[in-house]
Amino acid sequence: MRKLGVKERVIETASDLFYNQGYNQTGINQIIDEAGVAKASMYQHFRSKEDIAVAYLIARHTMWMGKLDECVAKEKSPKSKVICVFTYLTEWLTEVDFRGCGWQNIITDLPTDHNKIKDQAIYHKNELRGWLQKELSKEKEFTNKEAKELGDEVMVLIEGAIILSQIQKDTWPIVTAKKACKKILA
Picture 1 (cartoon, rainbow, N blue to C red):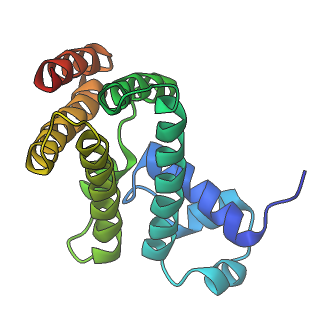
Picture 2 (picture 1 turned 180 degrees about the vertical axis):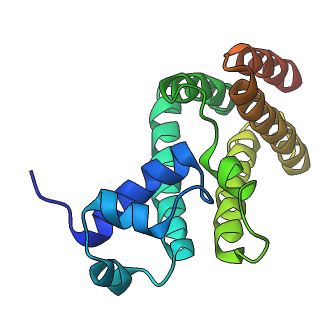
């Protein structure tokens, strides 16, 4: 197995720390220590903790969307793919002990001037929103306008299910959101 380079170790370590501990609760020295890298080496790749967080969110986006695509791949219809998102949420959130959404978590933990991080959170949420709308636009029964509106409704169900599952440490919000999704897509 290939040994990770400095950049990869920093991202991997920071990803774990930011997700489980929080952005503000994680210091640059902790990242350096736990990644086992020299400060100078880390600064060759990242100018700031915010830049590390951006790299974390980019990697997380790729991973999250890839796993979503894997989960829904077995579904045949666009509607069933959209409904299957809730199956993915259940698998993911139970696996991480209901720690919640990395983007929701980091955005609530940010100083107001960290726009590069906010931009990544917005990017991820807009990508998921676009994915939902695109899938629903493949259904012949929906106009483009209806597909966009339904996609937005499903997006709100997803986001609500994620945060409420994190608060409740339970899957019932996801199960309930999935039922609501089925109703609005019927």
